[in-house]
Length: 431
View 1 (tube, rainbow, N blue to C red):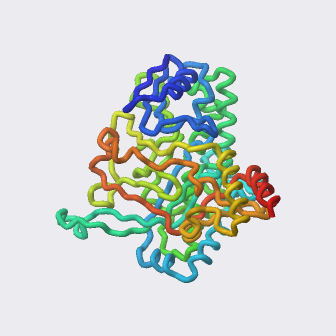
View 2: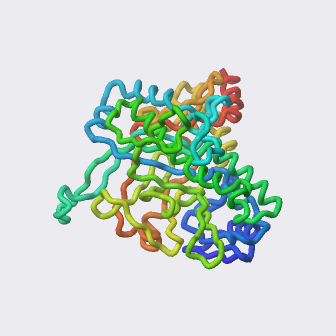
View 3: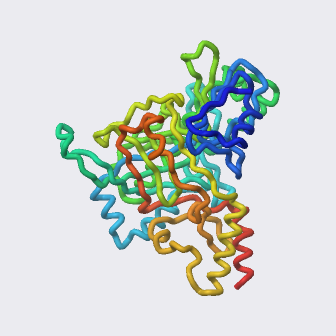
């Protein structure tokens, strides 16, 4: 059986699931809040070390959301406060919603760059930046962080309010095609070294391009969001991989983290690939961010001055948890949402118990089936973050300044069209 270590007791079902897909030459470090998704079957918050020269790797080890992540850029307080206090806040939220394409709205929308590129890894065709899954979001978040007004006077530290433009999204088309090709090769008995070699399937170029696809997608979304909100002083850079004649601009982020990434450990004596299943790998990230549920937002970690990024070092191969446990399946929670809306129509009251707070901060773009339902994350589909207060020392972030980013004006992905259609029809049948 593969070597499995953890900071806390591992759930027997999770240990058995890992043991069934990992080989004797593989190993895993189970982080706090580790689990296997009851929806997708993907492993979350587990650092998996895979022998790259041995065959018969189970494709079930990997998630299809390759190199998904979060990017955040600080925005001026005066601009953010003018947006949030403005009477046009609702109009700006609507404008932002319409500005960001989403695969949850139309099957004709395909998000993200293609997996193939030219000899310099540049795109060969135009592509659309936007939401590629139900877990995406973009918008303005507020944060209270402790820092001194003068870096030389540490004793003057106090809480300061800052604002960030934050985006969570994946690599879209590139990630999906990469996953299907990798799984096909693994099923044929290929090793990871063979899969990622020049001329392999999916190949070295595909690995390079998929590792950048989600970051590029988020960079363009942040730039689009800034334009929609009137934040015209956002710092951007040119996308070096853009197709000919398409000078894409990417936002320059203070935080940019990835999860579900895979990297070769060059310090190992044999070819060992480190796969960060649902957790943030500091090796392929700039700064550190983890997620809570959608209503609580994100948690970032900075140096003690509250500004600089920290250099993570821990025994979990320099990784921290990102994903929070799913409370129920999408099918069950959407059925529950539809039931609540049916009852609210009869009683002529709001279906959501926190409707006013939700409406003031969130919007979503969903396919029109005659009745709109709040997406599952707003009904508690996922638990909140719990590891920061309990495991900061062991994970190497105990001395970091914790920045809790709370949603203020955010657009999230709508409900999956297939499930929304059934739920909307069920609610409309009661009218």
